[in-house]
Amino acid sequence: MTPPLVAGVDSSTQSVKVSVYDLETGALVREARRAHLPGIDVDPEEWWAALQLGLDDVGGLSDVVALSVAAQQHGLIALDEDGRVVRPALVWNDTRAAAAAADLARELSSSVWAREVGVVPVASFTISKARWLAEHEPHHASRVAAFCLPHDWLMWRLRGSSDITELTTDRSDASGTGYFDPRSDEYRLDLLRRAFGREVHLPRVLGPRDAVSGPGDLVLGVGAGDNAAAHLGLGDAHATVVSLGTSGVVMRRASSMPLDETGAVAGFADLTGEYLPLVCTLNAARVLDHTARVLGVDHDELSRLALEAPPGARGLTLVPYFEGERTPNRPFATGSLAGLTLDSFTRDNLARAAVEGVLRGVAAGFDAFDALSIPVEHCVMVGGGTRSRAISTIAATVWGRRVDVVAPGEYVTRGAARQAAWAWSGLADPPEWPLVRESLHPSGPLDEASRRRYALAAQRVLERSETS
Image (cartoon, rainbow, N blue to C red; front, side, top):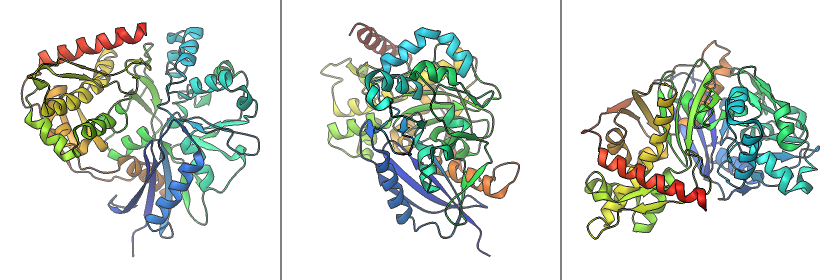
């Protein structure tokens, strides 16, 4: 008898991925990818169209028993009372809501926000975007009857619904809005009113094993935010996970919600009913993409160049705040290339500085965890950035920690599919899907001189952004 198949969807910033897995073993059966249009204002219909093409490319769902959708967190989709999109979605890495976030944080104080909902408003979060919408587009705000997130909206469309009262979400994605308390699993409508000026309809929050009816006999799992799905996709409940995609993420499961009034560590929920302390940086894989374009090389050649250069790139230091930064919270910061000399300004050193800059930027997550006494002795690294041989080779030495690298793959879709399998099976726990990993250890002592140079260059960038 053919084992049942389950599917997972990852609707990310840059593309949608659809993967089909063997429910019993977690073996990948088939997969497809479709690109998304770039931008910070995106018509959700573009995501829907890409998903339909991805489902066609993967051979459809006729032999799939369950599916779950994971998607980029925080994006604000505003709907009117008839379920129509009021304006293009405001996506997570849009920094225009930075002033709104700062206002919200001042109105209640960072310590109050951390205590009440586990997060302090930054430009990325949905609540900041709601304030921005109310202040800057009152003509659109007046039409809003419901807010939802990208994964909520795609699941809703898969169900064939246009009734806003049928919107659903899960704890992991709801916890990234800024108006949801993951301890009580309830929305904080008072905070939404503070941000938007009034209440609107919000998706019903389902439990980790819950499911809704899809088209035909297809079971739709509750879905998730992309980071929670990636963590579940790895199947290691206690791992500290570093995900290098468009953003750089450091996260690990916890039994209680962390309270970080600096806002660096977000007290998100995970996909199992617990919590997922998380630090996010804005600049990761796209820094490498752009550096490769500037050098006129592909990623394999970028890695070769970076590995030809010595550690520290002969003093060349890249602070990669190309799109502003979230950790530290400087949405209007810009990048910096320091240490330019005739000796350091070479192609291989620039490639090395880009790789080390991404890794040192992500290390802000380790520092934030250390400040809260959250131990990180070793980590598991995933995401598109791990396809870079230079990243996987250099990371352990730059971070001074053991790094386990798993085979390149779509771990967000894997986590979504694992959650779908859990919902379909009705079992107490998600199925065990084993993974093979390679452990990499630091090849030498920490390059303290390079670390200090980066810290100094980053501090200068931050000081400049405060006065600009």
